[in-house]
Length: 368
Ligand SMILES: *Cc1c(COP(=O)(O)O)cnc(C)c1O
Image (cartoon, rainbow, N blue to C red; front, side, top):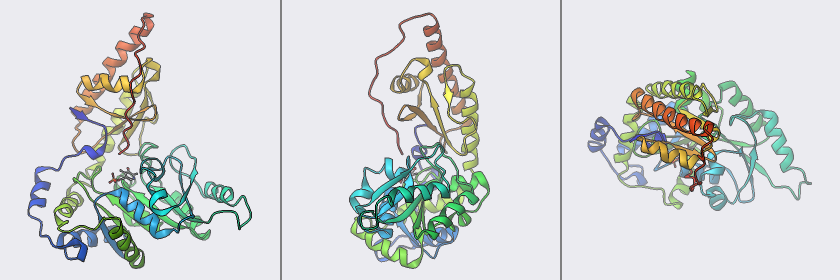
């Protein structure tokens, strides 16, 4: 089965498994795991931040960061399709008691004017009645917008503006390194725009799990307390950190291949009748397309595709394909071929006037 559902599908390579097996370990909770400490030093340096903290996954990095930046009742500004709003089970509301103020945009990227408009919406009532805007979150790359990249100047403008307005700034950098490779901008430059930032090792970097959050010493000290409170502290976590270190050494530059494969997939799909590709030259490794012109719904399409040995996911009514370490150029060709066959079958059926509308099945939302 070719798994284009998500870049979380990556399995640890043999070399990564060896690194994991041989990792020196200690008590992470006490700050005594040498492999975790090495990863933290390395990531803090990569992101140009004073200190860093290890987590099992990215979702808890977002919870802990929002908790550390806000107080209950505060307002958090984020793009309207941000992972923080759409795909974390309402966690920020539960763990931090914050209000989310969504900023609408086409590509996940917004401007200082958009931030000002959001602040105006929040402050529509007199001071006593309105909630306090406290934090701006940005997502690099933006997942549900199609792996879109904030250029450095766009990011800097928005974050500088937010700071002027007294907001803290946080980057959900699950795929920050995809943006780094795509733009040849350093992670440090992107990270310098925000107060806190984390990267995920379990996406395109190919580690089985792990995320690192970075910021000032003071911020990380507070984050450490919340991490403990949420049950995020670990013991011999060097086992996990070793996979993350290995991915930094071996899987960063190769993200370029994933981007090339995604562009190729998008271009070829756009030439198939009945397939509408959202962006024929995706910024990174995520491709969205629509199959409604074929007269079938997403669930039916995904089922047919699976019969051809290819799995993709969906977000709302769009199909989402994500390229990664375990998907080769040949796999992409197989996927294109399968989709061509399905499209041909349905465009023919429709033009023959046949009853080709299948009954809808439950759509699976693929969100990772
Ligand atoms: C995957 C993802 C997360 C959550 O990370 P996990 O490691 O799966 O918890 C957060 N934000 C974005 C943009 C993501 O793509």
